[in-house]
Image (cartoon, rainbow over all chains, first blue to last red; front, side, top):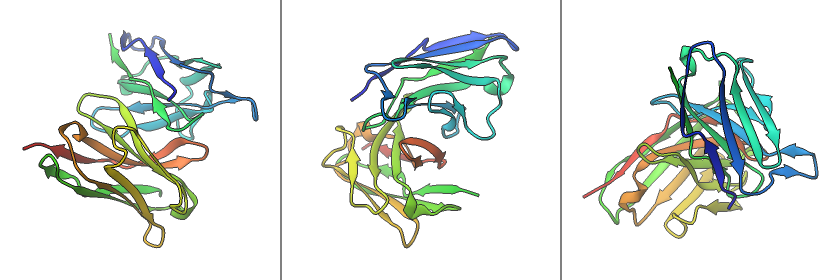
Length: 113
Length: 118
């Protein structure tokens, strides 16, 4: 199975500041057939199910604010929240869908400083 | 609007069984792979089972292989998870999720809680 490792486990950011979350896969998840990275990001607020934010490493899901962006390729990826809002307090997970089973990172908790 | 609604969770003794259901609406259920993803208390997300559009292909996490069975009824737009020989470590919220080919999950239910305890 592909192991997904996120860093940091938690971070506290001031309102309006940038939050950056990293995700590393144990092998490349860039597919030669379409030159796409099989990487998604999810947001999970307390007591709620996960919500898809980003797929193909950098494509925002419909309705997701543009302060959320994804980048990276191969084995190293980043989720950036450009200007943290109070409603962004949540745990964020990366997930690879390059191979089965799909696997998630351990999660990164984002709080307000 | 697309909806997934899980049911069937509860308290069960170790060694017992439960059958979870997930009712789907708002999309063509038979056209999509589906997943069961669980989250133990205070822990992360683990995909425990997935099933193909027609039910002919499925996959399981090693931790549940041989004990859990995923199935679907496309005529009734319903996904199932039969859980046997339950253990304390199976205690979790179980979510069903719609797959957006080729494998990210674009719609999630609210989850159903399974507690395995004597």
